[in-house]
Image (cartoon, rainbow, N blue to C red):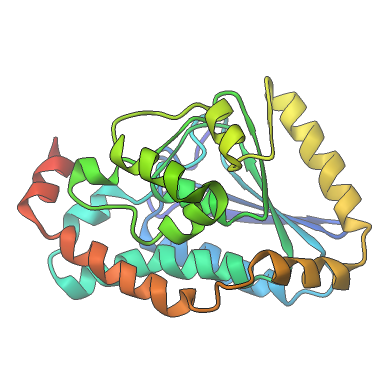
Length: 252
């Protein structure tokens, strides 16, 4: 059962060298800004914890993995500054995942839209169920996946990113996402998914943490400019969300 709290929930449990971070929101695990900030701060905190080696990132429940940005908050945006600040939440989260000193494994149990796809792409390794279709619907509401584009393109390439972006009303299957590299593996059941998460994370947790960190730095080479780039992209989205097109699309 999903938490009824409109600001969402965040729970971290630590077992051995593995920290499991679970986020939740009653609106299909979407993200209001306060929850984005909480998750960003939690990952930054865990990054410096010498007692853990691996972070498993998951969402609450057995439905959608993440529905992206909170539509209620998007509708409430009335100035460029407010819009930029809101989309900066996703920029900050992706950058915190990128710079985190721990390997982040994503447990994807269901569909993901928009910013949720960006979060999956920012994981170092993601496994999913066959139910975990993905969609970038931003163009359909008058904006675009500007903030998450670098992370998604890094995983699946510009061609596949373009295909997802322009087919804004089209769900891409988990098999498609696996083929393009967004998912490392896909499974038929939640039980199989959780067994893989447990087995794989335990194996990684027994590796040299310094070696894991050095490899993570290699994985993310060439992304240091994202601190600036993603903030610039947030300003683009912040401007577009003020348009009448977007306001009308969000109301429908």
